[in-house]
Image (cartoon, rainbow, N blue to C red; front, side):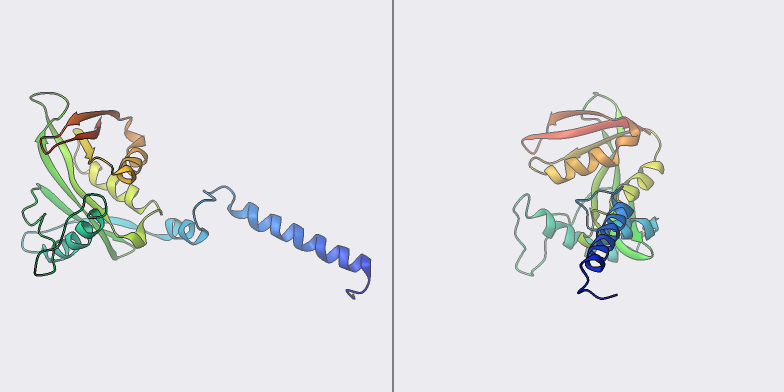
Length: 201
């Protein structure tokens, strides 16, 4: 076969057209806005959540620094003179979990038992803080981790988002889709309206 022959050149061009179509079709069922490497990561990663035992909060303290750094882009805050964030030094929670992606530390979840923002006198489970490191985002790891934590605490849940945190709102709407949640808003004592998803596990 020689490329000088027009017929052979046509056959070669047709071959590459077919090959390109096959490659595209092999991943067209996924979200084409998501890089293929991310789609592969989602399929391969095993997500686990591990309770943090008393006295073993060191990894959580370190991850809280990364969390507060990310959050400072949404609600501006500064580090102290020691170069650390201290806004969550006294964060309140009932249960704490570390999130692992195929054995690698990927984030954390803090769960509390609080008064409802929607129904006076009702007590609910609340996701006090939730964090997945950037490397592991957009690969369904956060969604799976959130659901694994929720499954550990049957009952009524309320999950809230701070104003302007549109990314968190979109994430929780997706993660909570299996729970047929009701969405509303409430006036937060700290100021401003916050979005709220309420559901029963």
